[in-house]
Image 1 (spheres, rainbow, N blue to C red):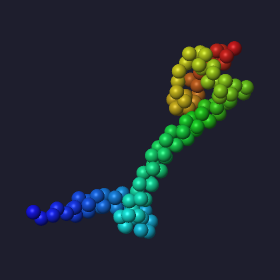
Image 2 (cartoon, helix red, strand yellow; image 1 turned 90 degrees about the vertical axis):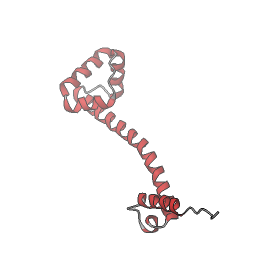
Image 3 (spheres, rainbow, N blue to C red; image 1 turned 90 degrees about the horizontal axis):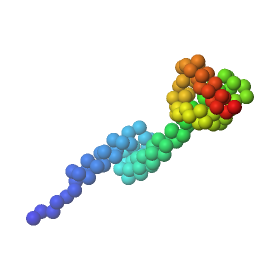
Length: 120
């Protein structure tokens, strides 16, 4: 019985990696060994980047909320505002609150008012 060789599946696997390395520089895009390690590392960066993206957006929402709170009330800070909302029993996530602060300032002013009343 003739020996089975792994040419076709191996070639397909190599092609898949080379295709993923499209846009890389130098040998990283056309040599399988280099492309394989570069694609692997890029995958690690992408995985971490997806987590970091969530952190940076949350930070942005908090900055926007803080700025909007200070526009509506000079002595109220972000942390006191969140404390007031919690005591008032209002549960709105920061993404939505940031959006409300930008698009509907009157509604956000009402939130600020309720938070301030709950703190007093």
